[in-house]
Amino acid sequence: MAQYGKTAYWDERYTKDPEPFDWYQRYSGIRELIAQYIKKEDNVLVAGCGNSRLSEDMYEDGYSSVANIDISRVVVDQMTDKYKEKPALTWQQMNVCSLEFPDESFDAVIGKATMDAVLCGEGSTANVAKMCAEVSRVLNGAGVFFIVSYGVPDNRLNYLENDDYAWTVTVHTVPKPTVSATAVPDTKDANSVHYVYVCQKGGGVANAEN
Image 1 (cartoon, one colour):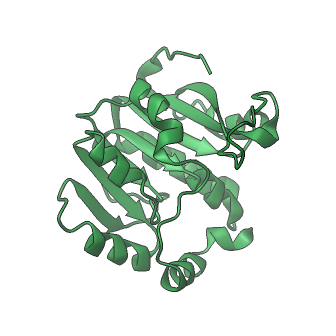
Image 2: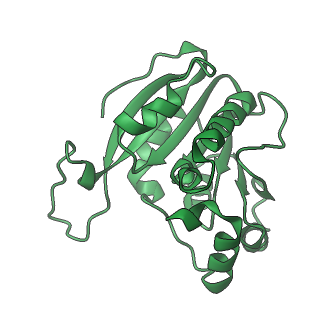
C-alpha cells in the first residue's frame, strides 16, 4: 500500500485507467451524512478528488460550489476537460499537506480515502499532522472536515483529537457497499463498515447518531 502515498503511482494509474472510480463509498452511501453537516450553498473543497464522481453527484444534487484538488496533474487535467461545461466544479493540482488557499476559504472539506492514502506514504504521521493543520487553516470558524476512512477510531482519533485544531470529532459508521443486496452489515464489525469522522471547528456540537 506504500505506493498510495506517491504522486508517480497516481499519475501512472490515471494514465492507464482514466475511468471513474470511487474509493470506499459512492455519494449515495454518504449523501445523508453529508447533508447533515454541509449545506447546499457552502463552499466545499474535495481534497484528493481523484476521478471520483462524488463532486459531480454533489453538484447534480444542488451543491453550488465544489472545488477539487489532487496531487496528480494527470487526473486534474482529465477532470478539468471532462467538466469544462460545469464552472461550479473547479480542479487544481495541489498537495493537501500544503494548501494554496487563503485562511478560512471553505465551509467544508471532504476527504474520502485521502487521509488513508497520506498514511501510506513516507513520513506519514508528520504529513497527516500537516494535512490537518492546513485543513483547519482553510476552514472558516464553524467549518467541517468530513473524512471517510477504513481506519478504526482507536487509530484515527489519535490524529484528529489534537489540541492544535480543537476540533469536536464525531464518529459515524456507514455500511460498506455489498455485492449481495440481502446482506445486513454488522455495524460493530470493522470489516463491514467504513468510518466517517466529522471534525467541527468552533466547538460545534454534533449529532452523534450512527
